[in-house]
Image (cartoon, rainbow, N blue to C red; front, top):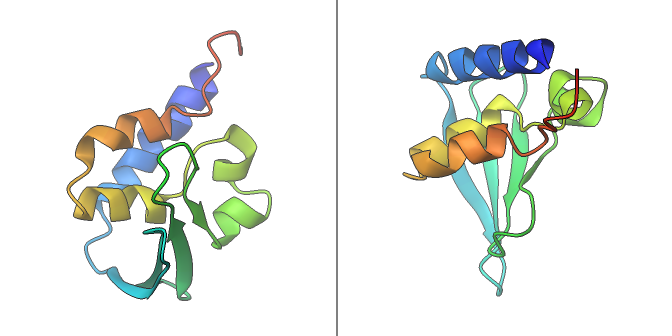
Length: 106
C-alpha cells in the first residue's frame, strides 16, 4: 500500500511538470467520444476519452501498454491526468489516480 501511494505522489508531481505538452482533438465520434493527440514528449501518443464516464480513458503510451507503473498499479498515465486537468476536470483527477487502488493491498 505504501508503494502505491508513493507511485501516486510521483504521478501527481510529474503532471505538474508537464507544461510543454500540447493536446489536440484528432477525431470526435458520434457518441461524443474524443480521440486526442498528445505532443511535446518523446513521441506523440493518442488518448481516447469516452463520453460514457463508466469507461476508463486509454492512452497508447508505454506506461499503459508495457510494464509501466500505470499498468502495474492500475492507475492512469500522466498524459490522461494532464488532459483531464486541462479540460477543467480537476475533481476527476484524484478519483482516476485512485481508481485502481485496493485498500486491502499491502
